[in-house]
Image (cartoon, rainbow, N blue to C red; front, side, top):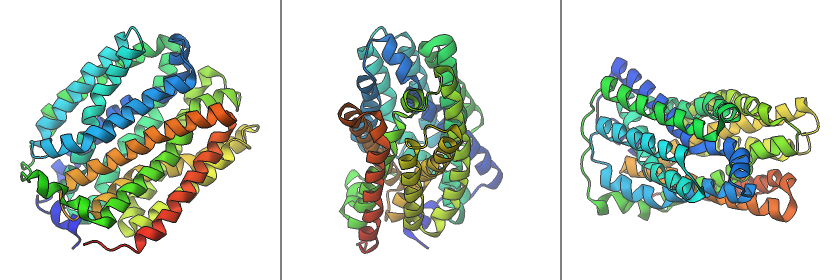
Length: 396
């Protein structure tokens, strides 16, 4: 039994209730991920409305991501012993209030505050939800359970972000944030009403939890997630703008293209959830290579919608698969403190998200929008090379 299996087997599996709880967590994840990444689809309209450049507006993505990176591990350590059901309800209520504030934001500074607040608790949700999912179904199905929770990411890509983008075109980006506020409140109510209470996690001392940071293999896996997500978001942050300006997609149709990107991502989520239990590092390599191919091909194939659709399909499959793959890979590399391990991966992912937004913005200003696919692919190559190094490391 691996170290992650030992920890996840502390709470006995609860078959029917476990499946229901995972479904609730997946829908909550859908709302949370839509809140985080919908800004990507709103950037063009938001930038026009607030008289900002697309690169400046893109730094709202960086703000959210770096907030997650800096505060997530600390807050997870402090809150990891809280009863999960109550913790999830509180997090969803915070998202309710933050989205309402974003909807009424009079300027970019208030909007930045509205993005900062939910970013504080998002990693706490991901770290504890991943651990809870594994506890509910048992060690042999932990990877699949986490991928099922992460199905909320695929649903957000498939429905939340594209439909939000289309809604913003019809009712404005402020109306879209009002919808998110209502959905966050609805999920808080449903979580309170239907999710069972699980055993309260054992309270570990801060020093005991942070001991995993002394394991070079674990730290290397976290660093790998940073590089993978940097590659992903160097290009994805500006995908909506790329579809408009390079592929010539009408603004009103961008949401449908993003929906197709998310739809094909369901395949990636399914594949990633099954392959990661067999070989976390192998799955990382396979889908990172696929990611690089899709991103690099997107710009030269933008002149043909058919070929562009193919490149976006490869990109979307890899993009969605890498979310659960990186989460499970990091958690399996940990010797204990699973919630902290999961949150450290979320922080790493958001560090990569923020770095990707910055690198993509710099690439646009220096070499033009058409360069970001190639720049992102170069970073993906670096991630693949890291895997060979990690494979030679041994945990303490």
